[in-house]
Length: 367
Image (cartoon, rainbow, N blue to C red; front, side, top):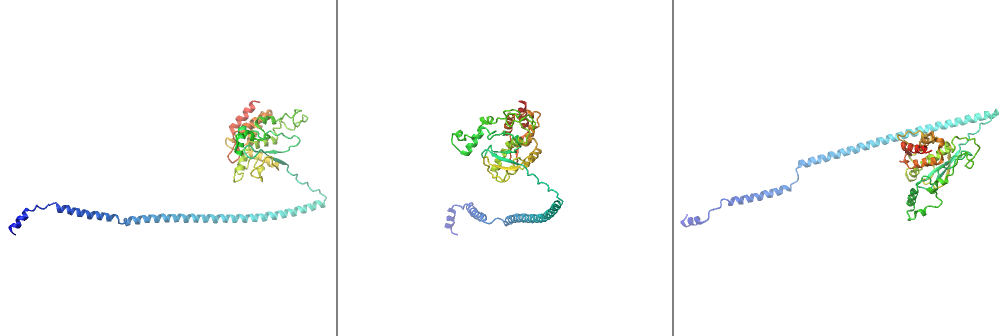
C-alpha cells in the first residue's frame, strides 16, 4: 500500500460500531412484524374446532333423542286412548243390546198381564199424575240486575212478589248500567224509561199485610194452613229469595263463551236449560216443580268453609227463633244487605258466613 493511500484511509472518519447493529435490528423487526401479521390471518387451532363441532353434534343428538322419545310417547298415548274408546264403544253396544232385550221382554210381559187382567175383569191402574209445572219469568233487561222469578202456583193462597223489578239495584248501579248501554248523553236520568221502577218506589210497590187482616191479600177465615203470618215458611218465598241472590250468576251465562259451567248446584241452573244466552225481559217458560224442590235440598247440603250458598242463607233466616216475627220490611232489609255482599266467581253465588250472620242478626234484633 502506498503512503498516499494510507494517508487517505487515516483521514476518513472511523466506522460507527452501532450502525450495522441498528440496521440489522430494524430488518429483523420488520421480519418479525410481517411474521406476526401473517400469523393473525391463519385459521384457529384445529383442536378447538374439533371440540366445538363435537359439542354441537352431541347437543343435536340429544335434541333428536328427546324428540324421538316425545313422539314415541305421544304415539303410545294415542294408541292407548283409541283402544280405550273402542272398548267403551263395544261396552255401550252390548249394554244397548241388553237394554233393548229387557225392554222387549218387559213389554211382552206387560201385554200378557194386561190380557190376563182384562180376561178377569180387573180394572187397569190409573196413569201416574203429571208433575206440576212452575212458571219461570225473566225480570229485568239483560245486564246487571236481571234475575229469574218462579211461580209455583200453590193454590188459592198465592204468595205475593216480595222482590219487584229493580229491587236491590241502587240508583247509581242503574245509572252506570244505562250509561254503559247507551254510551250516552249527559241527561242519563231522562234516558231511563218512565215505567221502570225506581228506588224510591220499591217499598211503595210492596203493599203486604198479614193474612188475618181483612184489608190484606188472600183474606180467609182464621183457619191458617201455614204457621207464618206472611207465608214465609212456603217454598215460594224461599225460591224467590234464592233466585234474587243468584242474579249475579246470570251475567256469567250471558258473557261466558263456554256455557253456564260451574253452576250445576245453583237453583237457576235447571231453569235455564235450553234457553238462549241473552234473556229478554218478561219472557216465560215452564219447568217441573219437583226439580226446584230437589235443588233446594242439594244446594243446602254443600259444605263450604266460611262461606254459604243462598239456600243456606235462607235456612239461616228461617231457622232463627224469631222467624215468625219477621215481616216483609225485615225480609227486604236482609235481602238488600245480603245482595250487596254476594259474589260469584264462576262456580255459583256465595256469601261470607260471618257477614251473613251479622246482617240477619242485626235485622232480627230490631224486631
